Length: 170
Image (cartoon, rainbow, N blue to C red; front, top):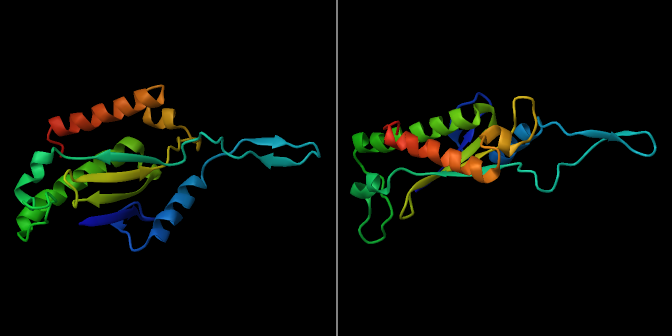
């Protein structure tokens, strides 16, 4: 099972019908990013392109403890099979929604692009996408995700995710 979601114009998650919605959302968010300007030799003011090493989109992988899904695994493939029981489905969706909302709160609602839920793999997970756009419309991985360096930012985000798991937030 793979479900894809995109953040709609109203800020709510909605099912992704086709990838053009995701690209539209990306263009909408990235279009808010400030580009520095310069004056060329002819005196014309121009916008600079983003640096080649600028992070314009970031992928995050979040997963519950793999044991959470054990009761719903197909014994032959190891993939998770969505249960028929609605209460059991609700347990799964409650945890998935909690992960998406926790992530959204961490990266900033305005920066969220979309998500893909992968239940068809041995370790089910959410693949989430965001744009590292600061409140003053600057593209900056370090400023949005904190930590001072990319490696420190990744460690900080990992620690936050682990903290959610330990506190039963999801």
